Image 1 (cartoon, one colour):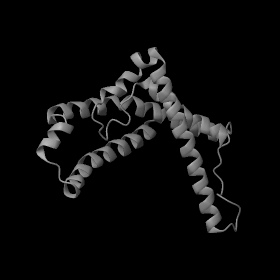
Image 2 (tube, helix red, strand yellow):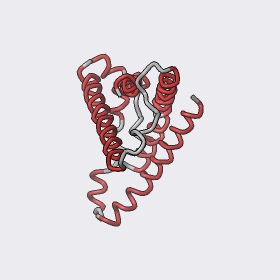
Image 3 (tube, helix red, strand yellow):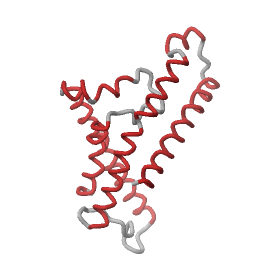
Image 4 (cartoon, helix red, strand yellow):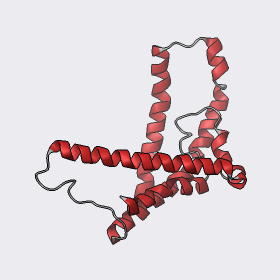
Length: 172
């Protein structure tokens, strides 16, 4: 768990910080924004800094949940409880295009499953009044999306959203 949490924190925070620093730099060089447009579309820097700090802090809980999910997936795999496969991608002698097609198909299937799961769980969060008021409301405190708002969720919402990663162990 500590190693998974450290890996997730490293990737999430370093990646978010890089995106936070680089995207605005490149966006300004590609499409200069007038001062009036900047005032209309952006919050005050102090407000945005507070939002980023809040989102960074709130992301710690979901990162811990995801680290727990990683540990659960590893346990499911090592105990042989699921359908996880860690052998060769294809039989020996399979062509490179066949291997690439198998990998692409798996990635597409997993992406479809994850996006579908996310869509319906997000819909559930909005349709269920209790979940919306007590769990999902944290997500909607981020009025201006930042790279740090991706995991700025309630831990219960993180458990619901990341559950698909455990279901994958029994489907693929």
